[in-house]
Length: 321
Image (tube, rainbow, N blue to C red):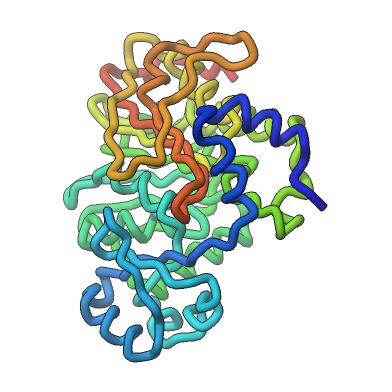
């Protein structure tokens, strides 16, 4: 079962022409397995020594000192080792490590992670904060919530409160409460498609993209209403679809005109493209080009990241879904 031809055509229109062929080939190539050393339960040096002694072929991630990759052939063994079982490492694609870094939480702050399960970014936030301050991790799906809670406990995240709640409505009870908000939005997951794993793309369609976009609009609205004036929102997805990325950002910039600004961001690797200026004849707000699309190269999954600053209060605004 090959990747859908309609998906290929869309991707060719989205990605820079000079990178399309390599990106398309990467979706069919075997990828290494990346992981982070959990700073809440040890040091990278000790973990490297332990795993090397166990026979793992570790390669450091060039731009993140506590992250490493092993060959795909060692992934299963990694999930069976003591360090994994004890929560001293977390398997996570390098692209997924970017949003918490861009959020840059401070140890004294109150952070909202809106759509937190299974917990990779929540745990990374807890590490960045040294288990200080407070993180609210919100998940609306019961099964995913319990997985989130288990992961938090196993990895030693003590400054996190997990909430089983509807993220689209949380702003009504907690308007402008949080210093920073991370919204890694549920999406069509195109960045995780693998040509040799049909289940990763079996349900893909433009209808599914539209459904995801509607949910993302509501979540992004809620995230902004939860954020204090002066605070930072990082919006991310693991999909290529502009309907789920640039269109969402452009919409909230229009909804909250004068109260939001997209910030310039610099990423420590080269497989990056700016946000699109338009899609299918519809122009986006010019600020959207400050967002970044991470290209699926060098063992990284396709991703979209955008950092926004809230410049004025928005609590008087009413939903416009």
